[in-house]
Image 1 (cartoon, rainbow, N blue to C red):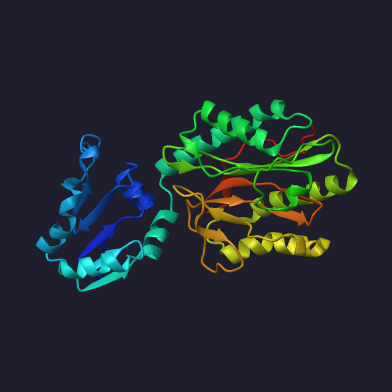
Image 2 (image 1 turned 30 degrees about the vertical axis):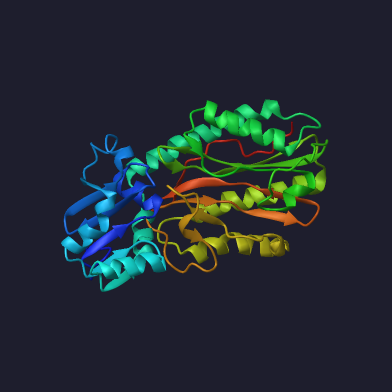
Length: 337
């Protein structure tokens, strides 16, 4: 705990993702208190039997604040911004000051353990299989909503515990919106199709984007697709632990600049993922910190032409000292259905 909160008497965890990270058990109706080498897990009677095997001292959540007082906690570190009501309550039970250590915990979580990487890899295998499985379902005149429903069903069929996030499914002109929401837009010949989705397995997320085509999309779109594919392949070859997020972003920005399409790349190159679909660090012009070894990030260049079309290709990779290891195995060559 000292590495996270060197100047506090105790660490109070209440963010659901951090509760899962520290306990390996998914329960938002809980609080964790770490005092020195002692770990206390507070929850209610609904969960007493399920948490019996957790390596914590179990306590009833109704006793949390009196326990704080009993332990004479004066300086409390926490992972969220506490509400005014809770702040006043903690003061009532003897706490003198509260420190937010959210950033410290984010740095800890940015370096994935081998166990975490294995879970992300399993989630990605489910995602890869689902991409293969969904292609035969894509039919003329179907709506984005229809395909969205099929995709979600296949993710669960293939072993997902949950969706990593609400999928982005877009046809035709809607693909120009990087985060389009599925609508009742119908598929037509020549349309590009954005499929951005991921599975959650064992509490950990995967993420992948593929752009496929319903019939021949024409020379312009084909040319743009090849530009993005080349940009992603070259970026992946240049990434490694120790590179800053800004340096990673620049690999693609420079490539697009040379081709005169920089203005159509409207987001960062990638984000970290794990328990949450968006974590730190990121491959962004605003991130001047080095990417640590064993961080897992997406690499997702895209170009978006307003009210015309957009194309994105996304893989997830593990950063190593000498490069990255790609966890995504789905086809990236242009697929025409």
